[in-house]
Image 1 (tube, rainbow over the protein chains, first blue to last red):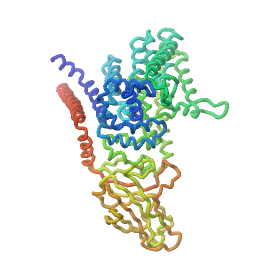
Image 2 (cartoon, each protein chain N blue to C red; image 1 turned 180 degrees about the horizontal axis):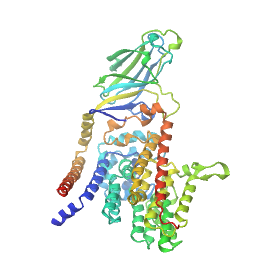
Image 3 (cartoon, chains in turn green, purple; image 1 turned 90 degrees about the vertical axis):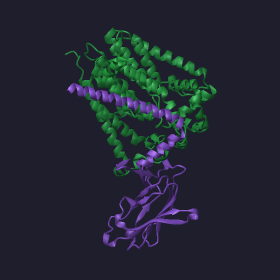
Image 4 (cartoon, chains in turn brown, orange; image 1 turned 60 degrees about the horizontal axis):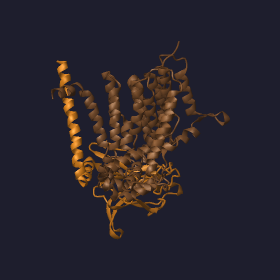
Length: 431
Length: 208
């Protein structure tokens, strides 16, 4: 008992941070969701009820297995499962709104949301565990745990939007953890990064930083790359085989993201994020990545973990700077950027501002889909009828196009500023 | 957009074609130019809450309309009963010079407006001096940009107490779950408070 008391007293600040993070998550779990959760829940319930896998990716399949294991808990969902069917159709958000309306007024909606988000919470606790294990220095540990506790992107993506982003974030952070703990063994890190990339392809953009790190640590040029590619192919194949064992061949919605490198909105930046016109044009994203690789590689005699974190952040920031993605995808920045914030606290405030403008931009751009009705399960009568942002007086008076441009510009300026701060901390170059 | 105002919230509710729900719609009754005595603009709504307090409308008037040539317009609000029987809840005259691109019309809170059909009616009380003085109040959503709503927007004055009681109502529907949920939230909250007290005492001791 005395040992416990001493432990609590000694680690009280960490415990307060962890409990506050947990409290925020628990408060959000039954009270918010986006319609995406309903469509995936319908597919998962087909697996629970009929054993057929019509899930659209590995994340859903993991949740489906959890739901199957605890299927009695999800029985109330069968009362309204029929209404989910239409939300499973892609690009029918407007048609799916009445479905959302019915779901949020369903008496068991809060309970179901809480239960559906438990797998996210488990992987999120994994993120917390890794955050605690990274640094022995108390100050750094507290900062990383504070970023976990109050990190809006993670809370928003998993507990408000209701998506499975804690899974790829966990594997992304695990890759950093393995690289940090054992710089001479690249297999665990590459395997974790490959799983993160299978779950969310954008995590593959951090690969150049990992390859440079292992090159400078082990003088291995190709083996880390081969280990990543092999892991991606083998684990991807295993996932596909598992799903195909339960797969319904006649169902058209089965589109495994592990079978093709898909970013959802990848065409947005590959096709439109370009500099110049005509044959001389170049993708802004490719241009930025090439520039960052040049900065990372040129004249360098060593490349330590701290620099790997910076350059991973730079690659991911380049992705967000040159693309238009989705409201909750900013969470993909978390593993790299949260570690970068610990090493370079100067970027914390610009990062917070950047994230705020990111949400602001997407809230204006994607609404009315992205609005306060995310909180409709909390109080359907109150939230379901709120006006979209664009019809608020302020936006009506200032033209919404202007607001979008201002929000996106401020976001881009802050991204560039953070990139500048990270590149400036480039100390190990040859003179 | 929520504006906290001493314990009450002003909520902007909107007619937007992406937000038409089974229990919330706007039906245009009349859409006349208000340049002739007796012309009316009116619409019917179904109120989703108590506390309807104001309406914002897209309104047009010539900018050269001077106050000495002002027209009087009447705004009346009715509850519609069976067979469209009208029960007047509010009536007031106002000068047309009050109109801007968007004009908000305030009226005393309709405390019992929930689930009521409500008719909002504007009537011209005078003939316009000439054609230049035409006044328009737009109800139909005419803006070609889907993201811009020009239709009426309804403001409800919502008490925080109402939100709380509604939330408790939701909790009572699934008491079995919420019993354990509140226990969990309470336990975590108490643990945080306990640790904060320990932390405070430690800081206090270190100062001594």
